[in-house]
Each structure stands twice: as structure tokens, then as C-alpha cells.
Amino acid sequence: MSLKFGTDGIRGPVETVITPEACLKIGHATGLVMKELGWNTVVIGKDTRISGYMLEAALQAGFIAAGVNVRLLGPIPTPGVAYLTKTLRNKFGLVISASHNDFLDNGIKIFNEDGEKISRDIEKRIERHLSKKMTLVETSSIGKAYRFDESGPRYIEFCKSTVPPEVNFSSLRIVLDCANGACYKVSPEVFEELGAEVISIGAEPDGYNINQDCGSTHPEVIKKAVVDHRADFGVSLDGDGDRVIIVDEKGNILDGDDLLYILAFANPNRTGAWSGVVGTKMTNLGLEDAITKLGYKFIRADVGDKYVSDMLTKKGWMLGGETSGHIICKDLVSTGDGTIAALKVISSLLILEKKPSEILANYTKIPQVNEAVNVKNKDIINDTDLQSLIKEIESDITVGRVLVRPSGTEPKIRIMIEAPEKKVAEKYTKDIKDLIINKS
Image (tube, rainbow, N blue to C red; front, side):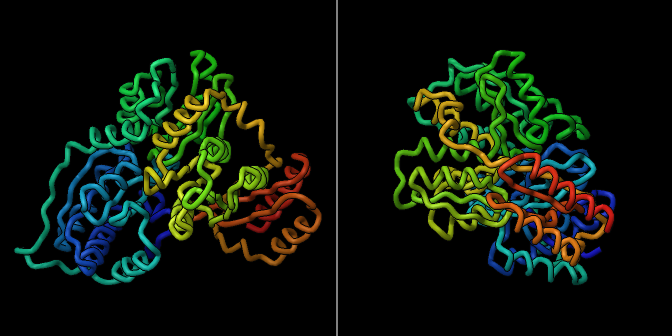
């Protein structure tokens, strides 16, 4: 199987795609490109999947065989690797993670010297080397590996530094769902050291339970916990810590669109770098309308926090995000960071002395339905009957949108329909879903 980058690195089942052999080649190919660019050291972090140790060893061997030095960070959130890549001046950072997927999958995400996902040009250069036979450097030139034991403490201190000194968390009780993933240790310490009373769930990883009935893809868990513990907030992260869902004191679930609106509302400066906000094709139409009413420009990027980040850089703006909970605060971080986004949202609410519901009352979402259909071949997206049905539905919906796209990381077709009434969106979603199933 040929290895190709998707919307968020290279991802797939460990048994068939992200194998030790594949990771050996990825490490070697990435190392060769690094050397072509004049760099010779990479930092490697990982989440809590059982396969992480095996794949880390294979990647390490590949980099060393290419003559590149390796710093092993151990389990750490993806945004922590981005931060350390930038601050340690190591030029490249690599994360072993499949984000919100279960333990059967794993993946590779790569960051450049600015802590941002590598460009498509660099991905293509790596892919070209992946297709070639591995050749080792001379024995005298092979790389060396080091353990870097300060990754967790450094990331914790960085997260704490993003909270304004006048903000005090000591009055807060916060339920924190770490998805049994990479944040299980560092994120609770961040909130505790800021003074909050923290009730941690999903913080006992065993290598197999990452994202299992917990984390941001299961918001009902944090919702129940907030109500049961009478907490002020619930913060639910995903397996690698780059996305977040927040729950308010009443158990209302706030997705990425809601968090983006709160941050935009709380920002008093709406000029220059703060004059615009970036969403994606999945962003609710109601949020776009509300953001523009606040005085911002609004632009949609392709789905994926990488594309949001690229658009922010292109526009010179500071705030963007995805409905799924990838929130990028460019004034603080270079990529989606669930912990820092939660800190900024909660800090903003404390400064404003407002509840989330008070702010979110200013905008209304259009009913939106999202479904995913498992397929054997994602090329079904080009089927003429499917395309005709999509056009027919688009012509019937006066206010709303239709988006049918292949997943960039899984063998699925994703369907999103917005319509003035939810039952209408549900009907059209079912029509598309049934057609895809019958055609597969």
C-alpha cells in the first residue's frame, strides 16, 4: 500500500497501514527531506495508544538511519509537540496519534519550525522518498536519540502563561474529560495549578481505552458529570488534545462554533489582525451571520485545522476554528490546542462576568444534521446519481447548505445539511445516505 498524506497527516489501521515497516520508511523519508532543508534534529511525541511505543521505535530507527538526531518527548498532547518544536528550535516535530479514532488506528502528524502542520509541498517531497528504496547513511553519520523528560512540565507552564494574571480560577469547579489520551496528566495539572477544583475523568489510559466512550466525541459523558458534580464548567478533550468541547453549569454543550463566537464576542479589538475570523465549510451558517454582525470579516477554509491555520496566516488574522472543537488562537499558539482554547474561553467569561448562555443568546444556529457513511471506495462521491441528488436538494433549500465530502482520514463519506427546519435536513440527509449505501 502506498503511503499518502491526508487532511491531517497519515492515518489508518495499525495492522494494515501504520505498520512498523511503514513508520520506518516514514521516519527515513522525513529525515531525508529534513536534511535537504538543512535540519538535523526532530522531536517525537505520542498519545496513549498501545501501538505508540512500537511505532515510536520504528520512526526513531528511520530517522537515525537517515542521519537525523531524535528527541523523544513521551506521551504529550499534539499541541505540546507543536509548542516544543518551535521553542526548542528543532525544526521538525512529529506526533504519533490518530486523534479521536480508537486504539486500532494510529497516525503521523508533522510540524515545521513554526509549530504549524507542514506544507503540501513538503508532504509531496516526503512521499517521493517513500516510493524509493531505503539507503542508509555511513555508520559514522547515523543519528542519535535522546529522552527529553521536561516536555510535560514545559507545556504545563506554557499553558498557564496564557491566562491573564488578573484571572483567578480558584472559585471554579471544573470537570475535565481527558479521553484517556495524551492530556491525561498535563491538563489536570494546568487547571489545578491555576487554582481550580478539578474532577478528572477519562484520565486512566491503558493503551486500549483512548476515546472509548469518553472525550469530545462523547459529549454526553461530560454533560452528565457536570450536572452530577454541580460543576461550573466541563472541559472535554480528544485523544491527542487538539480539540475541545465545553459544557456550561446547566449541562449545555458548547461546540466549536459556540466557542468561536464567545471568543469573538469577548475580543474588544476588531481591527487589523483581529478584523477577521476563519471557519470551515462545516461552520454553521448562523455563526457566519452572527460573526459578521459583530463587525468581523468571515472566511471559510477547507475542513481541517491545518487549512484554518493556513488561512489565518494568509490573512494575518488571529482567530479561527472548526465546529468539531479545533480552535486556533494564533496570538497564543500555532495550531489547534484544546487546553489553551478552554483556558481562553473560561478566562474571557470570567473577565466579562457573563455566563455562556448570556453571550450565545446573541446568535441562532440554523438546524444542521451531520452523518457519516462507511464506504469501500470514497470515489463514490463522483457518482452521477449522487451528484444529481445533491443538486436537486440544493435547489429545494432556500436557506441553508449541502456539503457531501470524503473524509480525509477515514473510509467514510461525510454528509452535512443545513435547512430552516431540522426535519427537512434529516430527510435530505437520509436520502443521500440511503443512495450511498445502495451504491456501495
